[in-house]
Length: 376
Ligand SMILES: *Cc1c(COP(=O)(O)O)cnc(C)c1O
Image (cartoon, rainbow, N blue to C red; front, side, top):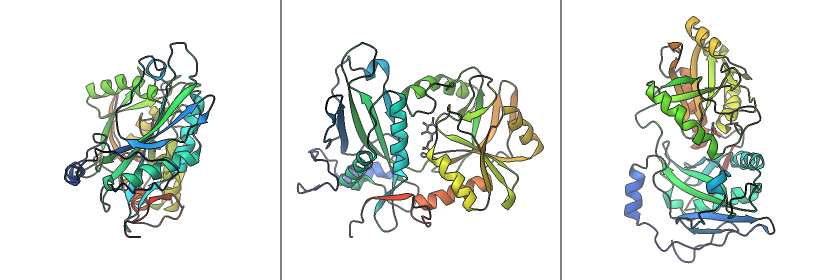
């Protein structure tokens, strides 16, 4: 990175003196996996009760120095987002619906009594980091992307329980390989009736770290039952399907052009995924009936048995769409369709990926350019 580097954003830049060599970077980009390697820089913007948001800066990626009594470490005010930047066919880098992530970040902040980061600062930070670390964006043409992880923590020092009076917003980035390097494979799921992810009035709608901490034991139980993922049910009756704990769910009834595609309604206890929301639109654009409704585990089992239910899939930023094959619970086991990846799941997956990677037309104006082509 030449020292004449000028950020396209309003952030001042402190360039890293330890930028990895082109050879090291190429070796990492060869097989990045997920969330294992981080780029050379990060963005930080601090908030204080008296001063509001500061100017912020692009900084060298480095460990944070924190007082051990920082409130985030004790009371868990920690929210995050996740989105991907893809190299486009023209060499520019673009991301998908970043203002939707910015708004969800604000909603999460409100629920955890944290300050709301303005959308402009959120989007500007994406520009700043992707621009300075442009060389870390995997080559386009496939499903590789640069995963962007915005997050916010409370930084006030003290053990009194209250909303903190200072916070840090941070953005880091990590190259990510294709989620299914050997082709899309269906997952098996465990219906959890012992544990609850979210209850009415709780934090299920917020993308906060604590939701994940509370879910790990059920994920471990699913693994013990021989399943890949846990499916969460409602807290009151353990009967209504909510989500997969990191991905939302979709149910396909029938087949061909008359298929009906249903996702559990946003009841206040599931995370409003941006992939989930986008797929309602994509599915309707392809001519399907797509709607939100309540789905019970009894109807899941009965409709799979009768054949009315033909496909189930999960969706989220990381995998886009993951088919669900086998379903296990305390009451036994059943299979949806033939247990393989269904044609509608794959059609929707390709349609959404085509928009994100620039292969297909962006008819809804969902793509947002973060940095132009190098030759532009
Ligand atoms: C992030 C997340 C999702 C998926 O949201 P996308 O915006 O589609 O990536 C689903 N469930 C939970 C619990 C999540 O944290």
